[in-house]
Length: 162
Length: 169
Image 1: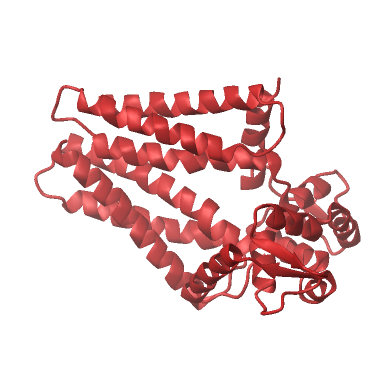
Image 2: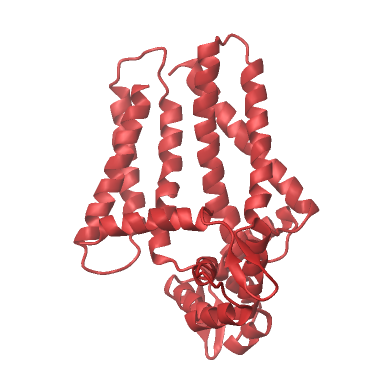
């Protein structure tokens, strides 16, 4: 059980370090990589700490490591949600009013948000999409992602999402 | 390391594999209408598999069985949550991934060419369909209105807003 408590402490420590870092940095932007690196470093220290624990029949080191590793993306989901404006979230905000919203009102709001140019810009910034004159083209890393996506699509037997 | 530790991880990940297999099998038979619905039903398969595995494991007393069940459930729940929100969710709903699929042509595409198959109307229709199917919103023939305030979006949004408030100076 000590392993679980240590894993919890190290996870909370990773979150505190990340929150502190985000409060300190002057530039605005996603700091997901910082958290992953912090969690990785803390994870290594955590495993070293495990080696110094007195063995007991109730030791759960594998479970602790699994829960620690799985908790990292859970935190990132909440963290990334700060920056991400999703169309579904937008729709829910529009229809939340007492009188609701018509289809045209919803569509108008989504059009104002310019999701497609915005996301294309983000894809260009991340290096998945490039420009060739007027055309948007996939970069080699973008092609690799699409390849994996297509395999997953085939496994699920579904059409494209979005 | 105790034997229980290995059993917990094996049961948790075994249940997760059952969940993913059930999820794939169900989705291959019908299209995704509601993501929550597609996930919720298959999630129970994993819990059933986990319960069955824990109850037939030899050499465990009741306390050990409860311990294995609770921690395996934590491993299974977290693994499923991560799979749904980091793999299946983005595949089914991400605009970025859809745009990348659209751009999978030798010469690429212009904005006008993309708009022919994927635009705000497609984004709007797909989301309205999913939100209606999940029961998050309702439609009275003229207007859409909120039907459930405790939906996943609001829960994640509330968590994100709290985190944002903490992060702000």
